[in-house]
Length: 321
Image (cartoon, rainbow, N blue to C red):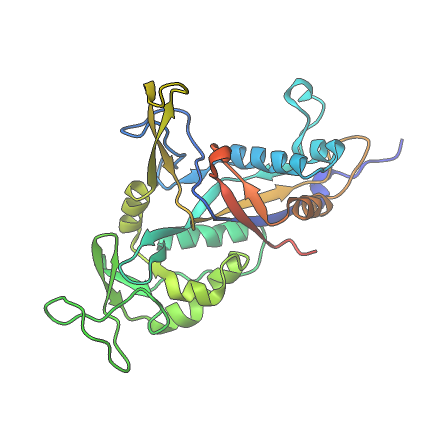
């Protein structure tokens, strides 16, 4: 019998980027507070998250739906539970963590908000996956300030001393951004917001968002404010189940569901070893490339698929070919 190469010797890693095109309900399955069906959240930060188990299941189902052969699916993800002791799967899927959170804006429709903590975690994920690239940390600014790309964003507007908007001039000076009902002073950091962060962030997100669009809408908040927004500014939808005959709501059939809003951007580390099956031994790189090619650019994740939830555009960082 020939010697088999260790699966660990052919390990590969990439960053999977998810850009929500519709609301995502990756639920906890239990009521917490006033929402009947809340979404998954990190315990420490309270940031919304899509757990690796949910993401792994969505990837497996997507590959099955797209016609990948069952042997390859078993090699990547492992056998079904009744044969789980045969061998482990080759893939490791991390949690999809929040990078950009959309917020309603008084000007420019919406902003992609982030914070130093979210940016630093993205940098750490890139490093964990062994990928090049640097996400620069923001310069210091105060709680009542916001960082935007001065002169190229669609969010800021000029105000006079009384706090009302001033008619536009040839070169208006942006001074204020209003997200939801909260106003923030613009912190002037042209080099960071025009030259450093947008281009490196766009690359770190696999160009899932065009650079010009990111410059128009990107806004950096302090960690505490960002945490408050992602805790209380998700979508909450009320749904009912109607009686087929009377067309009225069935007793007890009114409930609320929490969603990550459309335009949210998340990132997850995905690692893959070589096959752990005895009868074949493709490398981790080969398996990840097969996954990417079969998956394509769209993934449905989370519950409530039949009402349009969970549609995401997919991009990969660090997986060429």
